[in-house]
Length: 117
Image 1: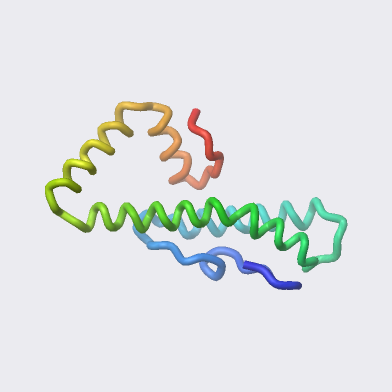
Image 2: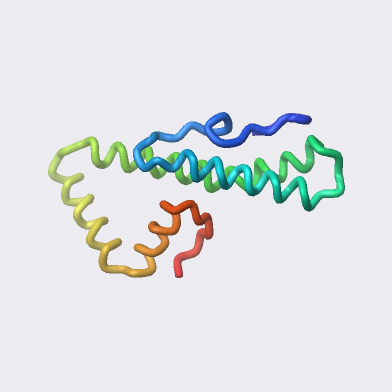
């Protein structure tokens, strides 16, 4: 994501399947975190240590979303009986558990708090 005096954000920093339209949310979160790191540091603009903090703080959310979208794409693209059963089971579990459902809704809206409520 970063080098001295260079930080990639949004689609330049990560590639995600367009399945859920999450690329723009990840990009907004990248910009928010980079801005936070720059404003809260007392270092020159482009300082590598500041940019590394940004990259480290965003990597988990970006990779999680990318891997989740890849997995969902695969699960819904395949149409064999075990996967249809697994999809139904997963959707029933999510639909019947308000904490899990709320977590996924927040993720879809770009809220990166990782803990279910």
